[in-house]
Length: 316
Image (cartoon, rainbow, N blue to C red; front, side, top):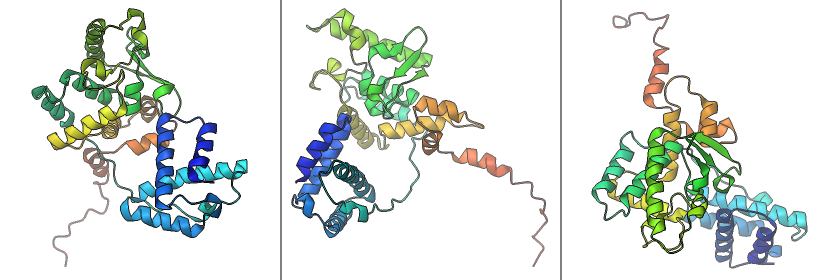
């Protein structure tokens, strides 16, 4: 049996998100290319150790661990279903990954990149759309998939509440967050322009508005093909902004910044922040929260009243 056949059976039985399917298929292709598409029944531990060595020679440990997790899941399933009789991955481990602090944006970063787009509308068409989108991501902590999954029916205009639905959820659950008046104002502008542009298009139906994508980029710029905005559109914008502004910006970095700002100050309400970010556990939320130097300085000041504070300048 080849990896493509095993992977096809696994994906056919499992109910995974499209992004997860692409990730598994990517791992399968790398596996086949690096190991010359071996017969899986004859696969040895040495083969896998050689594969790990090849991956680590050209990529990060996190990349190997990503492939390793996917492969182990497939082999466990193959053993359970009787498709394979041995699992060489049991003797091939993941590798340690250096823990570095998550990066957050400095206070004026988003203002800087929004100003860049406002002064160069020809390069960021439509600039007003992208500015509203970035402000929305910061205000809500939304992930890329949540941005593209958002529909107009998910906004409760009367109560200023947004529902993040299962379709865009990483944790496969739904939750609600409040919206500020500023965000509601931005969404109102976006709704009016959506109606304006949609009415001028041939296929517009007024009763279908609620089912439409909120951030429907191709509606405002036909250079983007298709009917829907997709995650790669947002990824490419962030890459361009990073290059042209000199500020490294990404959806995940914006989300980390939102979490850190929500947790700033003394005695933050971590349980509410957990709900706001849609995390399953408080431990996940703590991974996103990065105390800043000023917060730590306040803690450090508690240590200043030392009971042994005696002069040392005259001591030998």
